[in-house]
Every structure is written in C-alpha cells, then in structure tokens.
Length: 275
Image (cartoon, rainbow, N blue to C red; front, side):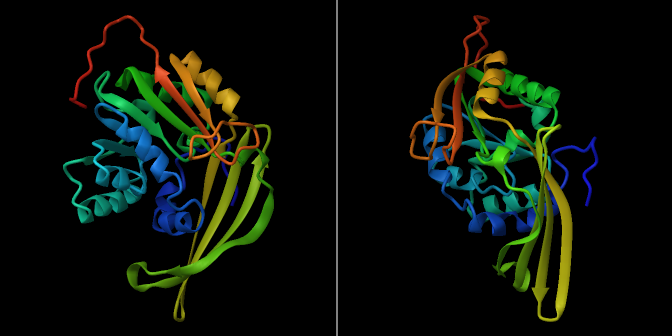
C-alpha cells in the first residue's frame, strides 16, 4: 500500500485502534508508565497528555491520583480510552477531549505539565505542524511548567523489510481471536520518515478478517528536537536514556527530553479552567 506524498501522520490510527493495546502489551507494555507517573505526580496542577490514544498512560496516572486531560483526534482510540476511564471510575480525575494537538482548545497557562509520550510528536510529518504544536504547548503550559517529550529511539536506524510476521498471539476481546501482524517497513530518507505498512489478520474458527493501514513517523533525533524546543521558548532540563532517569546518549534505548517553559516576563496567570 503506497503512502501518498501529501498524507498526514494521523492517518491510520483509527484503523489501528482495535489492535493498539494488543500490540503494545507485547512490545513496550507498561515499562514507561512509572516514569510518566513520577513526572505527573510532581506537577502542582493539571496535566495534559498529547495523543492519549486508548488511555494506556492516562488511566494509570489517574489511578495514582493525577488530575489529567487527554487529547486525541481519533474517535476509535478515544472510545477505548473512555471505557477504560469508566471501568476504573476515574471520571473525576481523567477528562478526555477529541481535538488536534496542533491547536489544543485550552486557556493560556492552564496546565502545570504537558506530556508527549511514546513518539506522539513524530506523527507530525511537516515542520510547520511541529512548530505549531510546540507553540500551542508553550501557550497552555504555565511559566516554569514541565514539558516531557519521548522520541522513538530507533526510528532513524529501523531496518527495512517486506511482509515480515512481526507478532502473533491470542486476543481475548470480542470473543477472542488469534491475531497475526505482518508488516512492511520503508525508510524515506528524502522526507525523513519511516513508513509502516500494517496488516493485522484475526482468525476465529473458520472466520478470517484482515485489516490493512499505514502508519508514518518522522525521524527526529534528540539534538534536532532540542533545537526546536529551544526555539519555541523552552529550556531543556534533562536528557534521559532510560525510564529510570539514566543519562541520554545516541545509542540509548529510550530518548526522553524534559524541558520547562521559560518565564517570558508577561505575567500570565495560571488557571485551573481549561476551556
């Protein structure tokens, strides 16, 4: 399946929603959750999660006592997140909003901390979209507030391959099915993007259903993102190479940037109202 040159990075995520938690449980799982929980619990006020998806991070943070707003543009992803929030009875702590992270619909200085976990900013394929999003985060974050960004560490060096069986396993949801992921990966060096052609096949008895879609991510290094954050008005406070707080290096398995919004002298008043 070819990816159109003018396609958007958010495309494919609606189709991915039914399989996101299944795949994630077999790859990253919850290894990053304690880290983001620590960052969020240190916030003196509301936390915003960009691209909250199925609530994989938002729900555990809510259970830990964090008051959080999650924003995502995918209705199917948010539907799963809402079920999670309802089941855990977190409605007083976790609010979910459908929206575009390039234009977050919240008041200035509404949040003490903003989180962008698991490469969400790499779904912004155009430079202007990333710049617009960083500007929006700067606006809704309190002066001296924390902005946490995680990049997918191995995207720039991801091997290219065709129709590889990447994962197999049983999925209990909706009566259960055996799921197989076959994927093709291509690097577009000119556009600096990594393209994943995904084919998820569900087998339940004699019934077989295949879903195909494409996910595209921009390949950004830590120094490249640091420069963009500094240009947008943030000061870097930490570069981390694991979820335990170890220092970052180019070969680290995890790429995390912690930054703070620089005080701009304009005296923006923090508020708990978010819209």
